[in-house]
Length: 84
Image 1 (tube, helix red, strand yellow):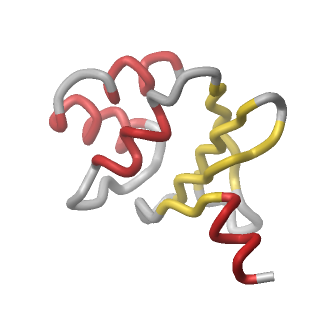
Image 2: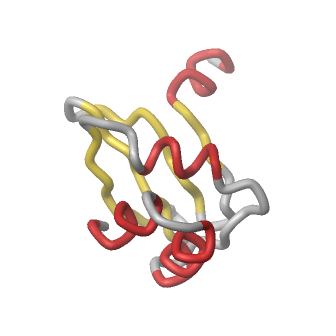
């Protein structure tokens, strides 16, 4: 996860390759993912969903605040709260 965070702070090419290495397809627009991966006071955690696909959880103060899914989609905790 440290390499993924470093790649997010580097170029699009580096971030694209790092996402692929951890099992996430990079979307065309990397900026939303980059913003969460480089956000201060966050910790990244590699998880898998029920189907075994990779999910990167972004945690702040022990709580998940965003998830990067295997298909490159990004879901934030605020989006989940607005659905409920």
